[in-house]
Length: 469
Image (cartoon, rainbow, N blue to C red):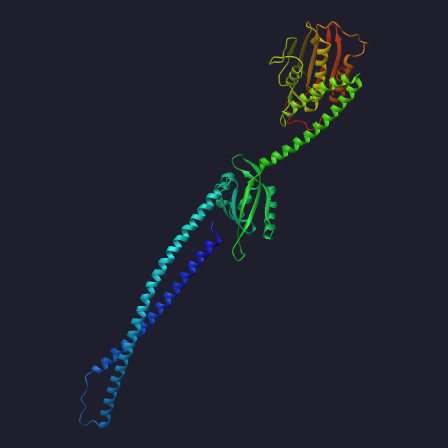
């Protein structure tokens, strides 16, 4: 790009060259005039010389005297004119010599000045070329799409990035041609932005620009700054278009994430409040309350940890939730089995985020009861957890979990007071159906607890994680 100082210097050199050319043309015209005057005088001298050299006719004796005197007078006049002409010729010759000398000196001075100015122009052009090369290198190295424009959005140049991104040739983008690369719905906004810029406002607008490689439109933020001359005249606009598509997508994802986080927080607080109130109700002493609430909050924390480790659109698999909760109480191998525990079922069954916390609490209560009073509290006991997918074309898919304990001898009477306050059974039989639309059953077999839980799971074609429960 040519800056103002370089442009001014180049213009000054061009003005000086024009002045030298005018001066030389004036000197040449004066010299030509002197040459013409000299040639005219020479012709006159030649004519007078011929007239004087003409053979003289001897006057006859019978010619009257006055006539003879007139002839002699005419001869004298011619001789006088010739003498004057020679003197003028001499003066003219001297003037011509002076003019020629001056012209020669002018030519010498002109050649020196031309040589000097040519050297300056050469240096200036080299500097301009270097500046232009630096400008293009800078522009072509930018990640943005760069361009130059006159008023009204009449583009005069577009960088190679524009061609590489849009597939539009540089000459096709000139004038209003660049609008063809914009999404049709965004073109009016771009033209309106240029109208505001012509009225003195900053040029800034957002538009979707076609990406030739991906065959889709991407969002771009376009800005331009005016370039003025020293006298305040607008020379051109220098602009860039910056790809903000990924940023906008991240902002959208952030909005979804914040909304989901807010929803999860509200759900978690509601669950914590319900757990707190139910634990207080079922605790006989402060020690009982402290132990129970601590265990249940830890279970909620584990479930929340699983949720937070998943990105937007990802689901918590049931087998991972089960393994995480059982592993908090007993030692398991890498597939979820232990010395007294057997687990089986399809892996990767997804759960809606809205049911993870409550389902985790239910599994926690079952595991805690099994550890304190059931199959895991005795060396002969065994816990078997099996899950499967059930459903029909007329019903949504469900995850069916079957919890079966064996080897338990101290089975409580059906009318006996629930052990541990009965929170686990109430959660399974009442809270899960009410909050999750689950189908549940809970009872005691001859040697241990039998429990089934069916919850709706997402359809395989469903996209994204739910932001609402």
